[in-house]
Image 1 (cartoon, rainbow, N blue to C red):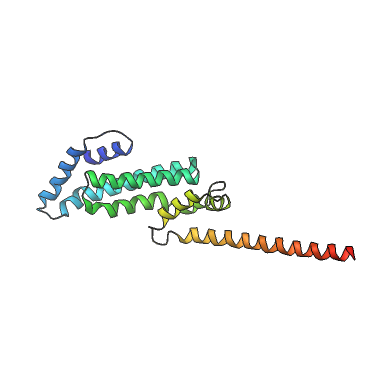
Image 2: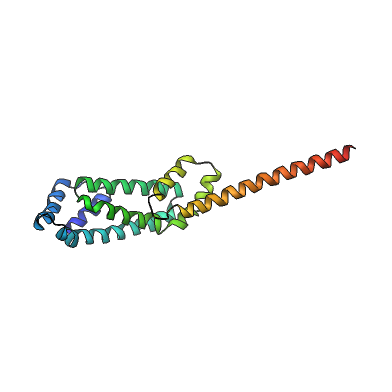
Length: 185
């Protein structure tokens, strides 16, 4: 619990003694004589539960307060920082599990709310040609199983609507030209 408390402090921006944390966590591996059982059962499982809870709270707050681009920036930064934690003091075997927990809480749980945000969701990003934000959305969701499906559906709807608008515009122009030609004669 003390180690997890330190991880949470670091997540909140506080400085912690990473070397000490690495030494403590290495002891779990040493106790298992190279086997990962002690590390996984006595630390990692609790740390992953805490990670889910922590990011669930953050996501609940952010989804209410932030625009879709801001939320994605925060999510991207959190994923980067969790990978740094693995590099600095967690065992490398924790990385895929940790990343999956963060992705699930920040991106999967709130996917529809995030992508459908009224003035900043995927439709607004497409409409306003926000390439950087759309690229970030792709980077975040392509790593998640079926993560791009909702994005693809919104994109398809956008392209269909834009195509229909262009066809209607062309029809209207043609109708006006025929009407103008008929009135001239």
